[in-house]
Length: 236
Image (cartoon, rainbow, N blue to C red; front, side, top):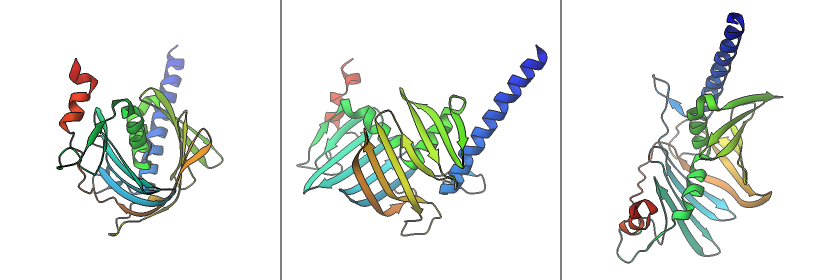
């Protein structure tokens, strides 16, 4: 019994160590880890792209929050999530600018948080938080990390360079490729120059990323009063 317990304990410890090493290797590969203390220093990010749409996203992994500003066929759509709130904006910062409109979208909360946590940095952060609940498998130079996120299971695939190249959820597949330092100021942080998102096998987004700010840009997501009042929690 004692030997069996030792073997199981050793196996669990080895798996945990392998997982921690895998995550750190992936974070190093993207340049997320900085400074003498070797900690994840990416708290916010902002990036721009062109392709099927004109695209501008800003994210805070600490809040957590994300604003996605998309223009397609002359029509602009700005989607925001911040903490427990989701809403649409007529212009960035709507609800605090005269003449602007903020429209509550509480039913979109989960999907928008999922979008944040399936970005390259977000997926690695959430996989690391999953810790013992995550699983790592390896096959022919490809590493797959499987972990729970909210009420679903996410699969994150790393290539031989430990770069995140695919994130899969039950309904969505996101492909990341051609990692580069795309900042105006060199930071040695890598971000995918190509992002392709598919839903049920059909491509819904195909972007070439043209610029990235990974130097913890100042991005804010104040929640308008009309959005707070429309939240289900505010009516309890």
